[in-house]
Image (cartoon, rainbow, N blue to C red; front, side):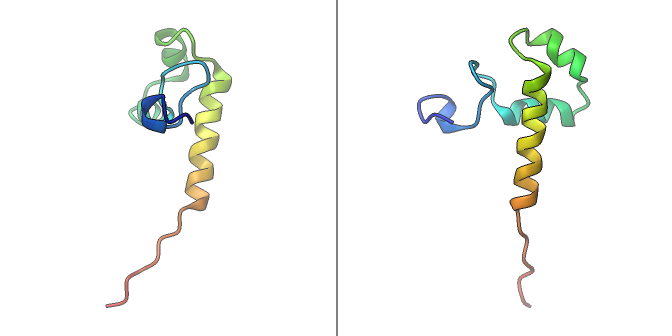
Length: 68
């Protein structure tokens, strides 16, 4: 993350592709092969790193019910 690139959002190393963008494409049903074809600077390892980051965030998120 760099505050000078995409307002500090996590990006794929050496690109201006936001991790959230890649995750949105995957969630929308884009295949890994489509992503690799459409974004030549992207590697399989980059996609796996995005998924790993999303997994980390999901594990860190805590939801607490608000008492009524």
